[in-house]
Amino acid sequence: MYSSTALVHKNIDRARHWLPYCHPKLRDLIALLPAFFCEGHPSIGTYGHKSCTTEEYHLLHNYLGKRPDIPIGRLPDRIGIDSLIVCARPSLSNEYFSSVLLICRPRTESSPDEIEEKAQEIARIYRRHGISLTCVIKGGTLDQLLVYEIMRTGIVIAGKQPITRTENSSDSRTFIGEVPRLITDSTRVESHEWNPFQCFLDQKADEFINSGDYPAPLSIPGSNPFIIPYLHILHRYDENMDSESIEKVRSSISNLYTPFPPTHEAMQALNKAWNMTGSYRSLEEMSFDNGLLLRKWLIPMEENELPVFSWPPPEHMALPAARLCQDKGLWSIREAGQYRHSYPWVVLTWGVVAGLINSGTQLSFPSSLLFRRDIKKRLLALHEEIAQGAEIIVPEDHTKGSIQFRCGRFFFSDTPFAILEKGNKYSLELFESIKKKALLDDIDLDKYEKG
Image 1 (cartoon, rainbow, N blue to C red):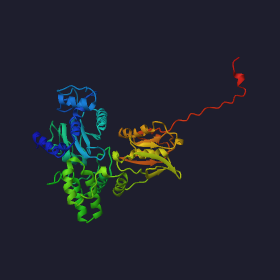
Image 2: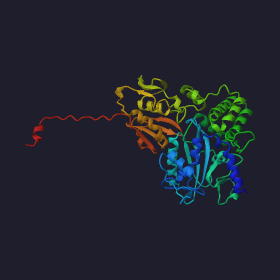
Image 3: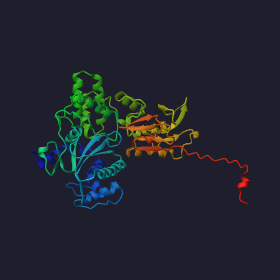
Image 4: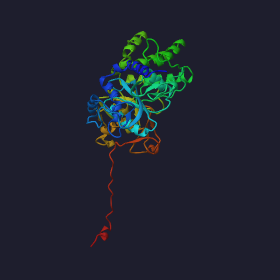
């Protein structure tokens, strides 16, 4: 049986692989997670953890932009969380190249809905500082892939330590599930972000899981724990001399994990061993055209899918100017001919979600379209609406289809009246409302006049 001290040392050992490499702002936001749950109303405390220290109080003030509503230096009045566990994941959508996965283990008597609402507030704080936070709120046994990720790279920032054997249970430990010799369940936690590299690697892992050939080692001598899940896949393709799959897996790992701070040094050695030092290009050097070609090579476009490299899109791919034009009945952006559609609202929405139109882009279009004066502001609001959970984007005219957001990818549907479908919907109102004046025939009106 593991002692509590041994579990803490294991936690520290997992933390050393990535926490010291994170940007200081990201480390602050991770350390403040227990305090974020305690701040304001309702206040939700974590087992054995004080609300906040004096130093954390001042940090909270900085990141909240207001005076925190939280007591200093004492245990919370109400404990709703048994354990808070954090995993870092690579990201292509921010300057830190990192996103955060938070696993929240609620107490039996606590309200998951209350914790979920609080987690959404915290996710909004993270977004204001340019970082994506995905929260899983679940007690009991977790899915195999999540347990595997926690036991390789997860760190407990407050509460009980995770264990994978029920015989080790105690008041200060939480059983999260076993790590089997072979992973047999491909259920995974989907991030709020999407990129072709992670998607391709996940698809390959799923193929191996479904064929019963996906082992789950927690450590391999000399290997970074973030890279371990893909080494078996590469080994199998190498045995089968599948050069195309090897190239795609290596390219995905290189593009995803080279800029990720915890694996940057390890990837430099791997890129050299794979003879990829000359072929790897940083994301900042990648144009939208090149990124889209790479995405299509790894993840082919599906029917009616909008051509998007990643979500959220890289900021550097934005156009200085975007002119909406029509040719042979189809609308497009003159500076980006990768997509044409019969509805102008669809083309403009694509330009935003693909990252071609941002706050610095000069937008122009024919005056005959009668767009609202604040059209750009309305378009740019899409980012936050999707982050808030919008799944279906509908125009004012409900007969002109919709754009469906599914697992980080965008699809056009020509089915009318999507506003009536199930799911979180957002009405994108881009056109001026036209008020028609009623014309009255004034014949014989004089008899209705009062004398």
